[in-house]
Image 1 (cartoon, chains in turn green, cyan):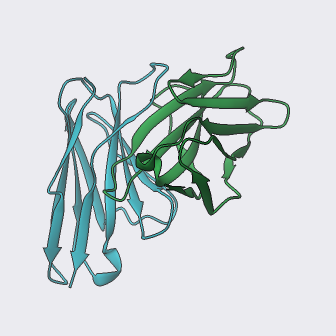
Image 2 (cartoon, one colour):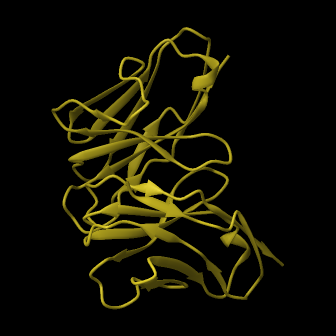
Image 3 (spheres, each protein chain N blue to C red):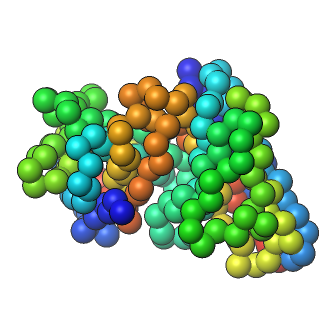
Length: 116
Length: 116
C-alpha cells in the first residue's frame, strides 16, 4: 500500500521568508503522481502543484515549487516569499499512474503559520 | 473552469435520520468521483470511488449499507448517510476527475455534518 509521510505537524515562518514543507512517499510503482493541497480553515481543498514520476524537472507554480528527489522518495513543497494568507493546513498526496482518475492517498498534513 | 459544488454546505440532523449530500461537476464531465471524510485535525480519508453508471468501490472499513453512493450521471454523485449517529458527524468532501488526464482531481467545498 502507498504511504505518505509528513513529519512536521506544525511549521512557523516569518512573512516574506521561504519555507519548506517535507513529504516522503513509499511506493514500488514506477508511475505515480505527487500533489500538494492547501486547506484553509474554511475547509476547501486548494490544488497547488503536481509532479509526475517521469517528469525530469521540478514542478513550479508561481511561489510554489516542488523539490522532487526521486531516489530519496521525497517531494518537499517550497513556498517562497510567504504571505499571511499562506497560513493553512498543507497536505501532500500521492496516486498511482499519475492521472486524475486514480485514488489519492494523503499525508497527515502540516499546519503552517505565517507570522507578521 | 473545473468547478465542483457540494450541497448542502452545512447540515444538522437528529440521530436516526438520513442525510443526502450532492456533489456536482459544474463545467466538466466527471467520469470518476471520490468521497472523503475528514475528522477535526486529521487528514482526508477516502471512503469510496464511484464511476458513472456502476456501483461504487468502498474502502476497507466503510459500511456500504450506511454510506450509499449513487453516481447516476457524469455530473452528479450523491452520498446518503443512512440512520446517522453522532459518530458520523464529520466533514465530507467530494472530488471529481475527468478520467485519464494528467491533472489533479477537483474538490468540492465540503459538507459539515452534525448529528445530534
